[in-house]
Image (cartoon, rainbow, N blue to C red; front, side):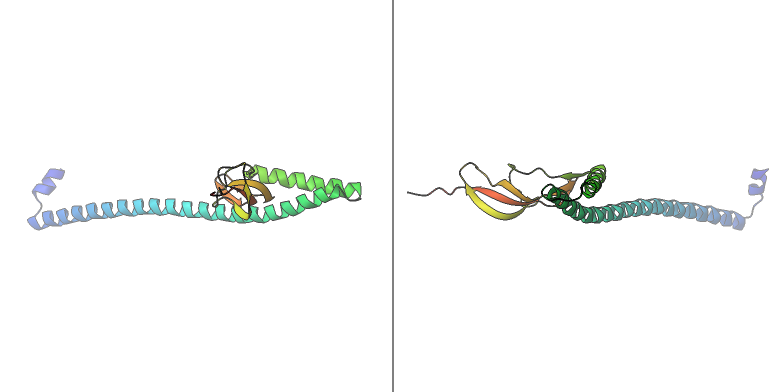
Amino acid sequence: MGLRILDGMSEEGAESLEELKAQNKELLERLSYAMAEMANLRRVMEKEVSRAEQAAAERLLRKLITVYEDLERVVKSLETTDAPPTLAQALQMVYRELTNILASEGVEKMDVIGKEFNPFDHEAVEYIESDTVTVDTVAEVLSNGYRMGDKILKPPRVKVARPMKQSSG
């Protein structure tokens, strides 16, 4: 029956049908492009949201590290003071809990003593000459550094041992 309709269709009707088919094809292509664009936009937005969440987490962890280091100093000072035992125990408990929270978030204290000095990872506060090193080496940590994966949250402040200069003579 469909063929009879086409057979009996006027030339004008056939042209109109072809135009509709072309429009339909164009609309389907535009829809396909729009859907692909939406999928790409969704991926970009997901990445941006993830980056924003990561940046917010890093800012919070940097602040927590400052509190952690202050609490660490307080806990160490309790060893040399006559603080009430319940206060000392409570502060030690909070310190342990904060240590566990930072560890659960992947925050690690950087172990840098004896390692080659890297100006991108370490903050040099002082330089000393040494006859025991062949390259700039971290000799002492003045303030701990912390990292989360490959990201340094707080660089360690260090004293750097440099090879002694050879005297010409």
